[in-house]
Amino acid sequence: MTHALQRLSVRQWSLAGLAFCALMMAVALGLEHIAGLEPCPLCIFQRVAVLGAASVFAVAALHNPGGRAGAAIYGGLSLSAVIGGIGVAWRHLWLQSLPPDEVPTCGPGLDYMMDILPLRDVVAMVLSGSGECAEIDFLLLGISLPGWTLIGFVVLALAPLGMLLTACRERPLA
Image 1 (cartoon, helix red, strand yellow):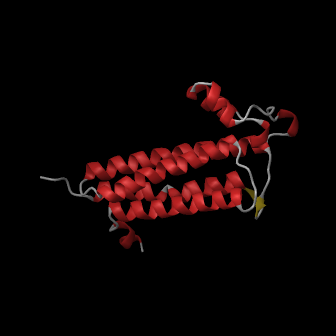
Image 2 (cartoon, helix red, strand yellow):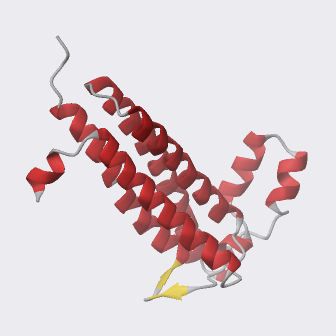
Image 3 (cartoon, one colour):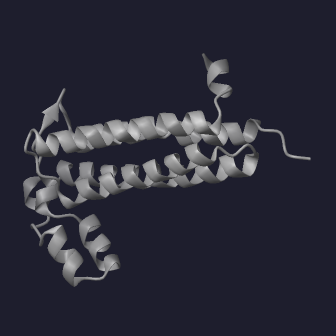
């Protein structure tokens, strides 16, 4: 099994990562549109991280670089998006773990903030958290949605790590 994973190309790792991103987004959109769970601002930021990783995976799959540099660049870019998603999901879980008296108050909606504030301020306000992000609306096997998203990002990290492994395995072009 390990030997087979070592032989995967950048395109194969990218397609696997892209498929997992599609699965993560399908679950998120299903929970929103079918189950009626409205995403909080941190949930939306986690979706942006998934879409960022998916974009890199799509370009990498189309390009399918043969050398070390391309595999390393695509692996590094997609890993950056995944690590960003891990950070946001971790922050979301931390907010949910706060005692009720320490939960930040609810702020304005993300749409409103995007209309009136610069992007830097919006990101800072969202990451500081709000009361709506601390609410636990759904549990599956005792794990909240940000917990499942964190697990998803950790699994998703295997694809960029596989691309970086491919970069280490490739022979330099002479």
